[in-house]
Structures are given as C-alpha cells and as structure tokens.
Image (cartoon, rainbow, N blue to C red; front, side, top):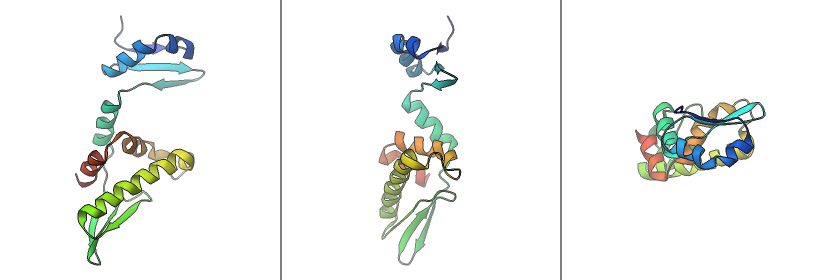
Length: 136
C-alpha cells in the first residue's frame, strides 16, 4: 500500500473521506481529483506551521508621532496605535479584514492573486500566532 492517498473522482473521494482525512492528519500526501483539477488535503496545523516558516511577515514597526505604525511591504495593509502592542493588535485586525476582502473579491486581481499563502496563514492562525509571526 502506498503512503500517499489519491482519489481520481469526487465520488471516490466522498466514499473514502475518512481515509482521505486520516492521511492528511498523519501528514501523508492526500489528493482528490475533480475534472482536470487536483486538490490537496492538508492538516490545518501542518499547513499553518509550514506557511509561517516560508511566508515571512517582513513587518516594519516604527515609532511615529508619539505612537507606532506597522506595515508589510508589498501588502496593502497598515495599522497605527498609541503603543507597540496596540499597533500590533490593530495590524492583526487589518490583516483579517484584508483576508476577508481577498476571499470575497481580490483573489483574482493580478496584484493580489499571489497573496493566497498569506491569506491562508491569516485564516489558519489565532491572534496570538499572528502576533508571533508579525514580531518574529
């Protein structure tokens, strides 16, 4: 028996959903084909851990006018706060808003479509995990 799990159709995958999910949970390659597209099923904790290691935040946190500003170069998201912690909390909220906008309408825009990894990281992370990611 192969370590990887692959189902060639939606019906086959649905009939073997437990096997597909078990393989993903165990960290094995688990795929499902529908028409010409193949989807990969990955355990969310594994995916979040992977994304946090390959998608660096590059966040810049700078003192500004008696407060703090946070921005990520190349991402249309920024935040300000009276304290460092307040600025980080506002940035987490801004990241969550961006992820919602990306899912709703930005995912096909040429200047946003490659941000799927950061959007997935945001969606799979708690506020505490995003804070750790932002501040390193």
